[in-house]
Amino acid sequence: MAKLTARNIHRDLGYFYVGLIISFAFSGIMMNHREMWHPEKYTVATKAIKVNIPKDQEITEKFAEDLGQQLGIEDKFRRYKVKEDKLKISFEKNDVEIDLKTGKGEIETFVKTPIISQTMKLHKNTSNWWIYYSDIFGISLITIAISGMLMITVGKNTFSKRGWKLAAAGLVIPLLVVLFV
Image (tube, rainbow, N blue to C red; front, side):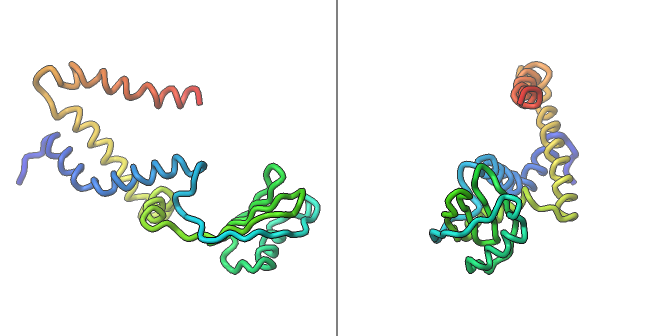
């Protein structure tokens, strides 16, 4: 049996989690930029529409669901919101956006982007088993970080001589974000 050292722990946890680390990093980058583009889905068709818009107080969830049915959208209703004179309605495979002043809008039909859509589920999944697995993964990342600091024990590149400076520098940006953003 192999000796239990910081190097062995670091190596074996790194090997075990390499796929998850890459998947999380990849999907995390996608999630960071989801306001600029929709990496999870891509548009396959758009259709211009014109609808009669009721008064603001009459725009309810029921109105949004019923409007979807009137427009021929048969997939599952997800949510709606009114923002800046626009009504946005989301369905499982369609998005509807309507200008509340003119009643003109568009139905966008989309499909999930293969691989990207599935990896982004890693960040959104809330099932109990995944939460526990993610917690274990988080603890393992902490272990990988600590064992990485302890691996080099001799020479000018030890944590106590050089590593602490890099670790401190690496904390600056997250601390600035926490304190000022």
